Image 1 (cartoon, rainbow over the protein chains, first blue to last red):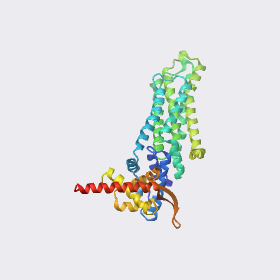
Image 2 (image 1 turned 135 degrees about the horizontal axis):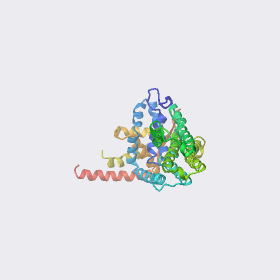
Image 3 (image 1 turned 60 degrees about the horizontal axis):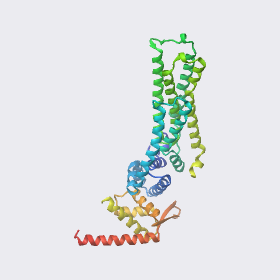
Image 4 (image 1 turned 180 degrees about the horizontal axis):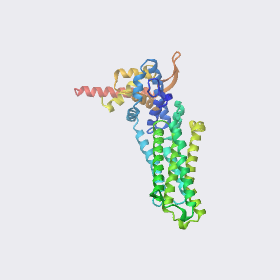
Amino acid sequence: MPKNLTNPSGKLSEPLLLNRLGNYLLLYFPLRQVCEILEDYQEYLSLEKERGNFERLTLELENPRTITQELLKETPEGLRRFRTWTAGWGLLAAITLYLYISPLRFSYISARLPLFALFVLSVFSLIHGRARFVLEQRLNVSISFGRCCWFSQLLIPLPVLLTESVMQRLLALPAGAIPFTIGKWPIGIVINSVLCLFIFLLCLILLWMLLQTFTRSIRYYPAAIHSLGAILFLLDMRFFLHRMDLNLYTNAALHQELMLPLWLYGAGILLAGVSAFFFKKGAGLWMHR
Amino acid sequence: MDAQIKKGILEMCILQCIAAKDLYGYDIIQQMHVYFPEAGESAFYAILRRLHREGSAMVYTGTTSGGPARKYYRITEQGQTRLYEMKEDWNRLKAIVAELGI
């Protein structure tokens, strides 16, 4: 864990503890109410610090679930808010995902791109992205991406570019020149295995980024979108390779078909970039709403 | 103590506290902790926020000598009426319970 997130004893710092509590509270209470609750805790913490009782409350804050449960006893309407919010945005996310991967999948990229964008937006709302960002700004939580995170993000374009360029080169060869095997393995199995391996690795990165988004900061969300864009690219490429019939395509058409999945990765980069831009520059806009 | 019984009593006690003089959250909680040690800060703060929301208490920011700004709670007229009603109910309840020999 980076040092700026911990105090000298190695425990989470005060803003991070409050941020974690805030993330829990946002599941049940609106932003305004969460800010009020955290302000009360900040005041309480500063006075406990003055009196030297800081440790006890810090220990209590390390268990935000208990605090949230206690608050829910006093304001049970939070549970209703949790259910409606989760059901509404969760349903939208599930529908978009279902439409995207359904057997009757939209074959046109122009239909899949808005579905991808809608899915990203609904998940952002589902995890209270805007409110979480405002909270982080208010609490002045400084989150710096670790080296591993940067490295994983720089690694993501590699499988995308590698797959695209190899496929473009391979399928541009005359039908007779395409090798049937690589070593003793049929070429189809090799390509499928490599693609599956790439997808698996990218899924691990996606899960890691989502975990960071939930537990540390909403600023990891763009990284998760980037990973998702790459996964969708590879899934699309794999789907195309499975159903393609070389006899039906001219070289130019094949070249175009192979370019289409790149739109998904491009959309992933664009959505990640837009959200990262809003996290950086849109603070004022979001803070005053 | 049963949560349902405690909820109403805590509200009445907090109103009684701020009826005597304006207090800030931390002070109220410290006073209440003496009598209700099992209740956490979050429960007290939740009651204070509810009292404010319902108009029984008003909030203003004040500072003590050199200290940070603090949120003070003052009972409102509506709060006085509510406290009066709660005390009436409480006394009636006490009389009933005493009559039953509990």
